[in-house]
Amino acid sequence: MIYLKAGREKSLRRRHPWIFSGAVERATEQPKAGDTVEVRDTSGKTWARAAFSPQSQIRARVWTFDPAEEVDAAFFRNRVMRSLAVRESLPAAKHSNALRLVHAESDGLPGLVVDRYADVLVAQFLAAGVERWRDPILDALAELTGCEAIYERSDAETRKLEGLEPRAGFVRGNRAAARCPIIEYGLNFRVDVEQGQKTGFFLDQRENRQRVRALAAGREALDGFCYTGGFAINALAGGAKRVLAIESSAPSLEVARENLAANAVDAGKAEFVQADAFAHLRTLRDRGAQFDLAVLDPPKFAPTAAQAKNAARAYKDINLLAFKLLRPGGLLATFSCSGGVDAALFQSIVAGAALDASADAKIIERFSAAADHPVALEFPEGEYLKGLLLLKT
Ligand code: SAH
Image (cartoon, rainbow, N blue to C red; front, side):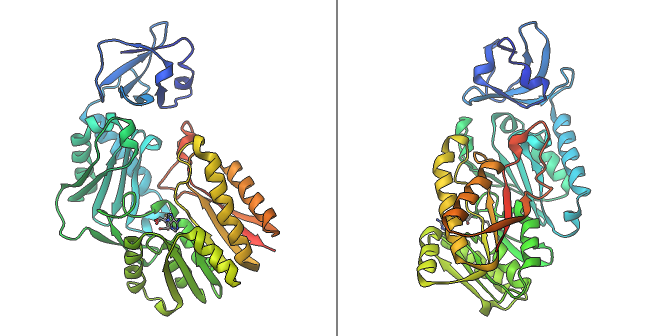
């Protein structure tokens, strides 16, 4: 049982799933990591049942706001079933065999991420609660998806905050080759579930890649942070005249080249460069290079608001360079996946970049994460990916 300080049940009233350490008055019965605890206010009223995590600032994550609901294997099977049902109704399910099946807090399963790549699942257990229920969750996933192979990628930094050791490897089934071929809107991609970033592929950008494909015809395109070639190959498939793609990681570029070869696009029009994008964009500017379409999808510069200032400088830097590299009439698709930089701040950073580049630009569209990364209304933190499509006039 945990008792909250006076008034600290306020966030639970709004059904927010996190209970911070500062809100907890005391815990009774010395709960251990992953134990299910009842959450009570000063009057003794029970508000929720939650997973306790003694080392984390997020001291407990709510499983259910119904104090009578059992948290057991059947509970997790139900939650997984509910998550899968949401995906079945999504149009993307008809266009890709790679989907995010469980998106943590937003799907009522705090700390659990599950991506499906064709017939392989990749699961991340990122909090003490889901760590405790790992086996029943894996059983439910295997049973309900019919996927025989499940690869665990519980190696994200955030596990440290929960006092959990990293863990990775096949936990159900086995595969000699961990590079899963997937199809996204008719294009082929290889996903390296063992060595790739995150769970192997950035599924959240699926619809935005497709959008860039639709905008690319006849344009000279630049992909500043290309990973395994997602936007670059979409631009080619959409009829781009040429694509220059930059990426700092050699293994990612290797997969990008495989992906290029796996699609019916003119590989001769693509150039992949292993470089630091900050430096290389500068070099391109100094050479007077010009493009008609630029995509900037950098890594998370600011995981939390505390890093927002440095992140702002980095976003401004690359966007300023992109504005300089675009011809009038050129399009810039620019993204931020930093939780610590919200949409309004991101827009003002990009506005500052345009100003300093002496560029005039209009927002003609806004981007967000694909619908298989839903945002629960009571959990705005789930909205991390934002982007702008800008027309340079
Ligand atoms: N748009 C991609 C995902 C990009 S993720 C897709 O659709 O799949 C961001 C990428 O930026 C990662 O692959 C990371 O390795 C790369 N990266 C990080 N820092 C970089 C830098 N300074 N220069 C170039 N690439 C960088």
